Structures are given as structure tokens and as C-alpha cells.
Length: 371
Ligand code: GLY
Image 1 (cartoon, helix red, strand yellow):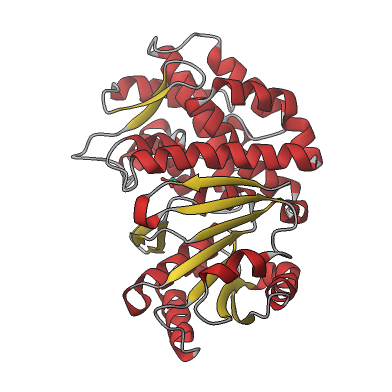
Image 2 (cartoon, rainbow, N blue to C red; image 1 turned 135 degrees about the horizontal axis):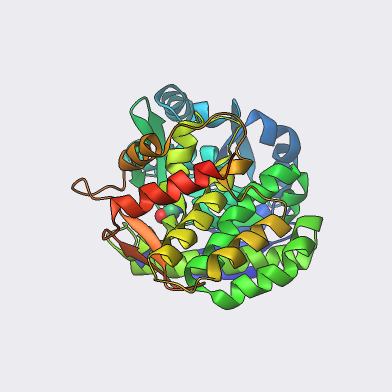
């Protein structure tokens, strides 16, 4: 069963298809976009091994030829040298303005290939085929594309909406349990920020999802994408409400920086820990019921996810240093830290009005609990 989510952005509107077997049917989905039967695919070497030949066959079934570039897997690929390589390769393949670039991979490939498409010949269309849970529920939808620089993550980029997203839920079976759960951190985030009944559904169905229940996976991805689409349609370029999608991210970015963007903490794991901290802070500030942070943490624990600072291996800097790292988040405006806090589960809001002392005390207590 395929679920379709429409991202209603006027001239830039597109559909996200969510369901099993979509890579094998890619030709049928993509054909209506093509001026000639040929696409250029950018992927990474790990994803290529698993999914490139099935994609080639899916395109071939509709008579569409494919050329491909497989870049090294990993965050380091989201950088100037590989952007340059991707753009030069697209030019060498004579990709024209009316052609379509396909991004086959996780968030790194989606962001890089999307940005390459945004700047190639002043913009060509692209299709996202996200192969990680995180990319399916977050980065492939909404048009944020870009690269990291030595100054920080995602500092160079463009809003460039895809023309189609194919979220093939069968590929989730190829993820390691750790990568699946890291992506699940972003799924939980949607329940926490805007849909309490979705959070309750996740409490009931989370284990089935992790165990591979195909229908539950389709439902979870589709509901997450629906929520993301609603927010992006309200605020495409993040002037306001889109910041809600950053629930947990201010804490997460500080923790990622403190752990050197390493294997010690994956992005989605940091989001989960960050959501738990954001609810704890909300409860301490009297904004949400006192029992909400425990409920959030109980679900993360039930799923076997990182929940507290104690779950992050190795040393962490002190509370002041973490607060400093939060201040370097690019979402700081005029030196004011912006937080996403909550009035309850499913009721997040954006605020710059958070006393620094409350954050510092929270971090001190969370660090002390590491023992
Ligand atoms: N990942 C957050 C956003 O797309 O705005």
C-alpha cells in the first residue's frame, strides 16, 4: 500500500510517495517528469551496493537510462570538494536544464545532490529517493539543501524543493538497528511537537515498528511526512513555525559538537536526548505537566534509545561549555538562544525567552546524573 502526501507549495508543489517497493517502480513514478528518458543519479558507495541496481532495473522497466556517481559514504562528503565533483560530473554527463537529477541515499546525499541540482545551470529539478529513516521523515522533504564548511554544519546551501520524493519503506530493512532507532528519534519528535495522538500511537506501536512491521512503518513515515509538509507549507523558508522542527536540536547540536560529530552520538540520537531535555526544561519552567518529561523518557527507554546524557559514552564538557556550544547554533538570532519548548506532549512552541540560569541548572543536573 502506498500513501501519498502532497506538499502544497504552489508552483513548487510535489508529492511524497511512501510505501514498499517504490525503488522497483521508480521508472513509472519518474517518467512523467522527464523530457528525455535519461536521469543522472548521485548516491554513495554503501547505498550503491544495496540499491543502485534495483533502481537501474526500476528505471529500465520504463525505458529510462541511468548514469550514476557514487561518492564516499559519510558526513565528510557534504563539503566543497564533493559538491564540486558532483557538479562537474553532472556537466560532464551533459545534464541539461530540463533534465532530472536523482538523489539516492541518506541525508548527506540528499542535501549534497539537492544543492548541486539547485546551482547547476541555475537550477535543475531533482527527485529524492531517501534510503535512511531520518532522510525519509525529515531531510528529503522541505527543500533544505546544502553542505558543511569548516565554519559549521549546513552553512552553505539553498532552498530547492524536489519535484518528487519516493520513500521506499522496504529499504528500512537494510538499516542497522542503531541507524533505524536514530531515525526514529525524528519520528518521535513529530509526535512530541504537534500530535499527541501520534505519540500515543508510537508508544503502542514503536516496538512493532522497530521489529520490522511493514504497515506500521508506512504509517509512521507517512504521518511524519504529513506533519513536516504541513509545517513547510506554512513557513517554507523558516521565518517562524518551521523552527518547530528543531525541537531538541539546540541541545542536540551542542552535544554533537561536544562529541566531535562522531560515532559517539548520531544526529537522531542527539535529537532524542535533546527532546527529553527540552521537555525537562519545559516542566521546570512550569510550562508543561510535571509528568510529561518522564513519559517522553519512558518511551525512549522502552525503545532502547539513548535518552539521557549518561547514555553518551566518553567525556563531556561542563555545563558552561555546553551552554556556550548552544550559543554557536546557527539558529541564534541577535545573540538570543531560541528554544523549542512545550506546553505538553504535542504542543511545542518557539521562544527566545528562556532564562540562561535554568538551562545551566538543567545541564548541571543532567551531567551530575552521569555519576
Ligand atoms: N530539518 C529541519 C527542517 O527541514 O526545517
